[in-house]
Length: 331
Image (tube, rainbow, N blue to C red):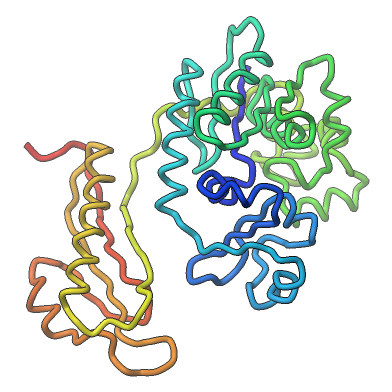
């Protein structure tokens, strides 16, 4: 059996951990530079907030309903993710960290997977204050479907051979892992409406119209495992640390302070994966958003960092790129 643990409205939940007054209040988190909505609490979803909505378009809705709005705090979200993954990893013999708030867990051989999932869910809530849902099934795709259903069915759902039709009938087609807008539109034109409808499809027909990926998807829904746990994450090709400055910078020492923090963060990420780097390009902005006045004189920066192989200036957030990465630290 495979389980998928997923943080509920993860960014919003992280904000609520350190601000309990946000419980029960509509909350949205905005993307870098407060451009658009990237996370919504259940209360915000009920008000009609959609993922990717530009902030300026949602401003009236925000003001009318007193929605609490937060800028993205990826340092916080990354730290909370690390803590959550440590708990989840300790709860199963094998795991695959799929994203910042999702983790596949190997529940093979467990006497009572549902009860184990409930205990894990309660532990994460008690220790970290984060609500999570866990879906359990024979394959990754079914576990993803079970996780979607768990969000409105008590937090834990286990799909077995006996109840597959019961659960998949409740899941809309577009909620299936791997079904995007284009596939959803084509399949609906052919009469597919639910995950169970797709489960009933002929794999050969699916392969003809959706390729091998679609065939794997339908076979996984039928309980035939096509996707295994990836316990070893693939090597990264580069590491990036980037943030926007809050004000226009005119002093090199301010850039040096930010660069020192970026180097420390990036080096830690490289060391954590037991890698070394061949180069570290630095990118700095050279103009403000509203005019052409330079934010930084390029010349002293170039003289100060002759060892940086690639130094460019463009109107963008300051960033340090470490690339390429090579397995094994230098002796």
